[in-house]
Image (cartoon, rainbow, N blue to C red; front, side):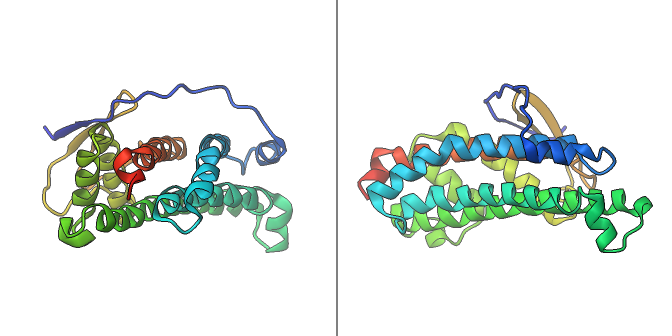
Length: 247
């Protein structure tokens, strides 16, 4: 049996409200995808949730301060996800555009599905990579010399920061996200370097098995946003911590 890790958080799944962009995306049912429409809705809610924090930190510290960037850089990644979906609505989800690029109707769905997988994988990699970069910068300032002065593997970085700030409850979501990202780097297949064992991890009250040499089919567009939500929540708590405020 594989290792077990738990993410002790829950998220309610509210009924989504359709805006014009979402209606256009669903109009062509053979091209539109409800998972990505829901991801779009969730991303907007996520942006709105943390926008006030970003505005406050910009006023307190300025835009170039490491505390502001700890929120602003991942936040901008979320905004880019929203832009990407809106761009897709007028291209990949639009038969008129396909006609303009001379792709026959029978081939459009396949191209669209491949595009979606590439985009949401890439968006998640961007988000987590931005978070990692910001945390590496933070540890150099916060704990100079630790984790090989910020050059150790990502686990050392977030484990040290979250331990020292008494935010250990967020370690599991970072570990879960790290395994997802590593699998994406292998075209969506779980192929850990140090072990051939499966690994069982819990997220949002459900257990997920990372099976060696098999795809992580459980990773959905909605799950990507749920992970981003918890990580953003953690980053805000880092910035709000007294030890970080006084740096």
